Image (tube, rainbow, N blue to C red):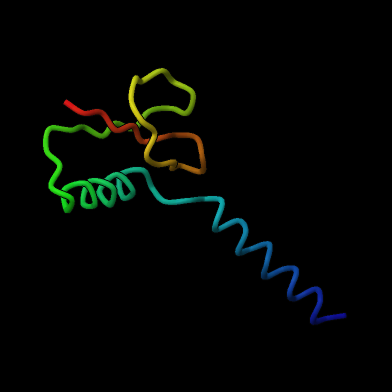
Length: 74
């Protein structure tokens, strides 16, 4: 029984850490590095609140799902 309770406790901690997600600036930098590696130029990445009209493609979610990263060609 003690092992079961310990397992449930560890899984709940892991779930909380997973739900937190990455900080927005860190994720934005990682996405920019991948785009740059493919040779793309003249683009912008913007961090906006989830659901806000930004007029681009959503390429990432951060801040525990509260914000999204938008890719725009330009």
